[in-house]
Length: 261
Ligand SMILES: Nc1ncnc2c1ncn2[C@@H]1O[C@H](COP(=O)(O)OP(=O)(O)OP(=O)(O)O)[C@@H](O)[C@H]1O
Image 1 (cartoon, rainbow, N blue to C red):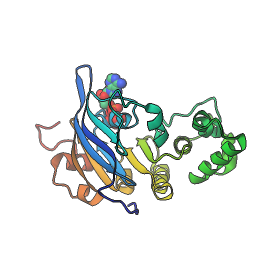
Image 2: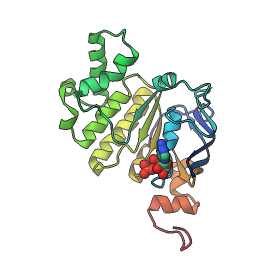
Image 3: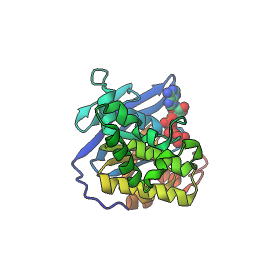
Image 4: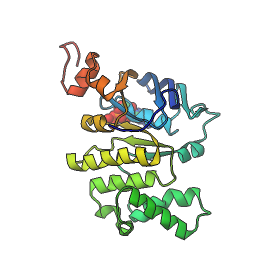
């Protein structure tokens, strides 16, 4: 359970009536969610339910059909306000695949966004920042010369996290950070998510199916169901929920009743 001071009235990300369809498929019907500055919000829900689509709206990779995304008081979701460069400077994202550039070594992967956004930085400074980011994810500086093909799944995620924090983001978005990892490696990633919150003071949004991870890293958990957030609560509140759909999801039971598949 995280341990930082969070002001419930200080909202970093607001989703207001978010709607998104792809062709005939409505993925987000009416998503409303407030994420507080400094908190870790975990979004849970069925596979294919639209959790990643929500993250992509937060970072400006997708524009909604209706509704608003407001980040730190600024609406980022209207075509007029759509300034991806400014948004992305504020945010780091850990993609589901832990996408690294395979042709670059670890150090170059971490330095990539730094060089792009800060061409004024000297090579010495870039290397110092790479070392600092490796340290934050508990890796020694020598690790910078490893190629992605030499890394295990867990290591790739860690390096992807170092890359996501290269520009000192205020917000970190994690898409399925523990998927495909064994429980011990998953726990290393969970600890790093907690570290990022306590050491960097970031606001985090984590999309996951992994309830062990959700219960460990979350300040609050939101459940997406049929295109809407049907419940938001602390870990204890979610564990003790009376909502049958949330209960079904967190306990992994297949059906609530024969009508519900
Ligand atoms: N760019 C796109 N074009 C068309 N359909 C899309 C696009 N992005 C997402 N979708 C569809 O939206 C739905 C929700 O996808 P999303 O990846 O957000 O689900 P998810 O809840 O993150 O699932 P999972 O947990 O399996 O990753 C899926 O049916 C997906 O095929």
